[in-house]
Each structure stands twice: as structure tokens, then as C-alpha cells.
Image (cartoon, rainbow, N blue to C red; front, top):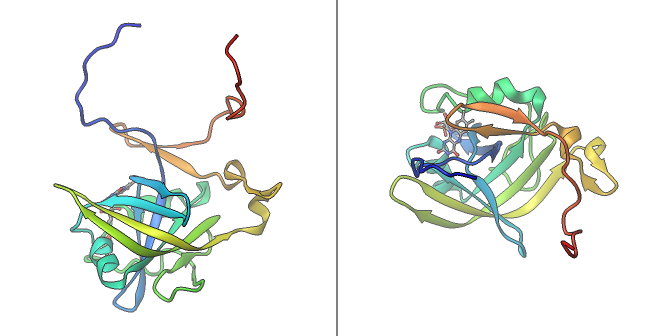
Length: 184
Ligand SMILES: Cc1cc2nc3c(=O)[nH]c(=O)nc-3n(C[C@H](O)[C@H](O)[C@H](O)COP(=O)(O)O)c2cc1C
């Protein structure tokens, strides 16, 4: 198949998450697309943020945060907390909030899966800072566990593509992974 050269600032589909912090004694939430697991054991997860985000500054201070994965029911709220900064408007009442074991990692009640994280590393790059947190607590809505695993289809979690700036739900499964033993 013929390939053409395209600009290098390529965006791949991103799972959408919401990072929660405690700012001025209130919960604050920010949408994040640049997120990935970074270590297996102990479990760690990381995301890239512009350092001017209020959330980035708060993480540097508090050294802890939450990461929640919203479902289709929270698309509007997710978009909102990704457009409005806590520097301009208090976002503490956008979601119903609860807490796990950490005091500065607010969890979104309506989200299917929420993680509590302690900051372990911060890496500064030219335009973004990459934060790595150890997952010290994980909370999943009971009815979203199917055969002992998190059911992301049932959770209706979603992805972002850019530059068309669209949210996408899961499509069809293409098959089981770690199954193909030979191509012959
Ligand atoms: C879908 C979506 C994804 C986003 N992903 C990121 C991201 O990965 N990193 C980042 O720095 N900002 C990202 N943003 C922008 C922040 O969420 C936005 O600037 C937010 O208002 C910051 O809030 P805060 O200042 O209260 O922390 C995203 C926004 C949207 C709508």
C-alpha cells in the first residue's frame, strides 16, 4: 500500500480519563487524553500535562491524585472539566465525590473505575510534564465486574481522536489476544 509523508505531530486514539486533585480544600477535576500504564509491579500509571494546568501545580504540591475513567453518561461533564480551569471557575460540584484511602484524591461517584495514586516521578519535557503515580487503591462499580474482570464495554468508556476532536465508544472485538501460535 502506498504511504505518504504526513506531519510528525501525530495523535493516536486516546483513552479518556479524569485526574482529580484537592485544590484550596475542594476537589478539582481535569480531563486527560495522554495517559498510559508505565510499570507492572508495583502498578504505575502516567500522563502528560501542560505544567500551567492548575492540576499539574496541585499534584506537585499534594503528591497524590486520583484517575477516574468516565462512561458515556459523563461525556458532557468530561468535556467541561477539560475546557474550564479551576483558576477561572470552581469545578468541585461537577461530579458527586467520594474518597477512598487518600485524603487528596477525590473519586467520581458516577465513574465506573477510579484509581488512587501517589506521585512517584515527575519528568519535565519541553512543553509537557509527565507524572507517574503508583496505584495504591482501585475502585470499580460492582455491576461492572464480569467474570472477575472489569467490563469496559459495559462501562461504556470512550476514546478521543485528534485533530477531528471526537469522542468514540468501543467498537467490535477483533478477536482474542495472545492466542495466535502460528500463521501457517
Ligand atoms: C478531551 C480532552 C483531553 C485533554 N487532555 C489533556 C492532556 O492529556 N493533557 C493536558 O495537559 N491537558 C489536556 N486537556 C486540557 C485540560 O483538561 C484543560 O486545560 C483543563 O481545563 C485544565 O484544568 P485545570 O486548570 O483545572 O487543571 C484535555 C482536554 C480535553 C477536552
